Length: 420
Image (cartoon, rainbow, N blue to C red; front, top):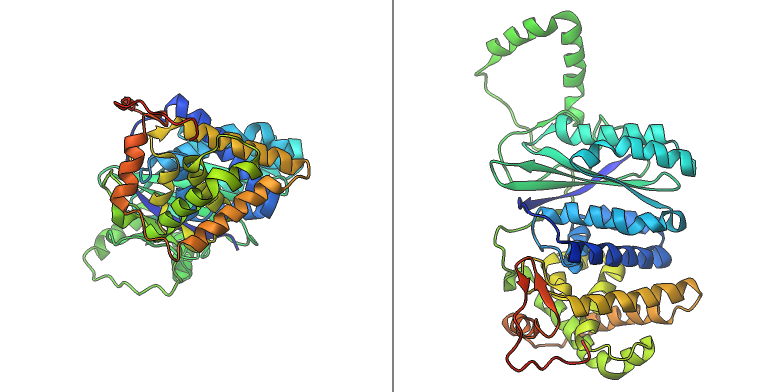
């Protein structure tokens, strides 16, 4: 049956993605998608989107704030813009979005269904049901405000939706994946989990079957007024709370602090990316990719992009690490290095284009770069977290660092390297 595949708690942040970053996110997101689909297929791409840790890492490698609620909106929006020109080629369609865009999801599905041949009416109903389950059948204090529905030409889909709790200043993201859909009402989730925040109502649980039936019977026999009286009479009775036997799902909880700390990153993985970039960039990698001028800093970003494409689920337990590829728009861990970002896009675009023509060398090089980074984790002992952070911040002006607060200030020496 369809399963919720995971959830994530994120600090609730306002603001918008600036145009200079949004356009790059759309381009890089589309290229990463093309790489995954080319090498692993559309179904695997849907599985990635359904994993909360991978989804967060995906947003981090694109330069979005590493822990905020806005990463969900920005990733869904970037994919919608970036994949629109490729939907006929890839057979992937992104519907919905935030606010009024979420309410247009059923109409979008009907339109796509008429165009490609799947049952848009059934999928429109699916969209409504998934939203209702997480907003009405499961009442956990979060009100849905974002609904992203990603569907393929063969009607397989993933839903990423998000709710907000204004009082707690938190957002909660819900991930769903279609596999053998049978029932939305009776236990559609593998689990419902999160930090304890008091009692919740879960009418989808198997133990609530009699409750659902009783509710229908009560409405038919007593009516609303009599039901209200019965509830008042029962008020104050002790409540029981049976332990759930459901298995755990991947559940991501992001901290409140804005800065990235050493504890947010698995340093051996970061050191592996740094070591792979240092050893591969000067000669072998640049020669193999036929892109003169590609330096260690770009190769480090490519190593993290390659991990997003090829990495196993266990590799994404520390999404903050992927912010060391292209920084963050709020300057955490450092301003977005636009020169590096644009080189990453250029190299990946060349690799994807050549792969479509049957030349797999460049995509193969990225796969080997990811493999090398993992091998180097075993022995790489430097740098420290503080040293890695200081290096990128000091070089930020040379890399074209930019944030929502403006451009990084030029260094006194003004010694920008020709290779980034």
